[in-house]
Amino acid sequence: MQAQSVERRNLSFQNKTVPASLSEEIKEALSYFPELWKTKIDFVFRDNIKNAVMQAQPRVRTLFKKKVARTYKIKISKFLKLGDQIKPIEEVPHDILVGWLAHELGHVMDYVDRSSFQMIGFGFNYLTSRAFLKNAELEADRYAISHGCADLIIKTKKYILNHEHLPEDYKARIDDLYLSPEEVRLMEEELNTDG
Image (cartoon, rainbow, N blue to C red):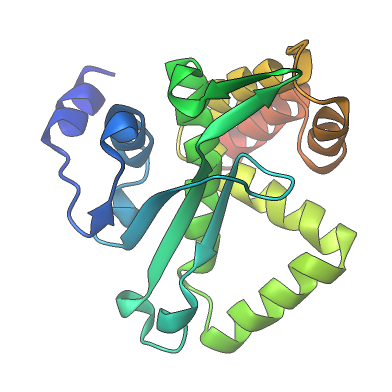
């Protein structure tokens, strides 16, 4: 863990656009994904992301460029709606934000080797097929878990599922589409056995 904190301190935001208020969380999440250090990623705040707190996508204007020249964006909700309250995303606990970001970086890992036409097919299937959507979320978690983020992913899942003020429909969606904390641990064991 000591080596990772030294790496994190030395990690620059080359090819990244990062909101200052989340720079530490983003830097920590990126430290688990050295393959993405040179990848162009814009972390951007949005007022509202339908059915999500964060969302990773390729930038459409770069989709038909060479894979190494593509830019990805990770949209981050400015606020978390908690019942009648609205909480700035920066007030979410550090590890929870890092876990959320690690999952989104898992999506970027899943995108980087796909051709432009594969990405178009991916986008279409993601929007039209619940089974495909569920598998895409599983793959993002698989990438995050294989990069050492299992504990962070579990903390984030528990935070969402156990938070009394998060909307029930959002929790039900997370419960339906994503791995449970127990399934995350099982996948971690499988990946460690295979590796």
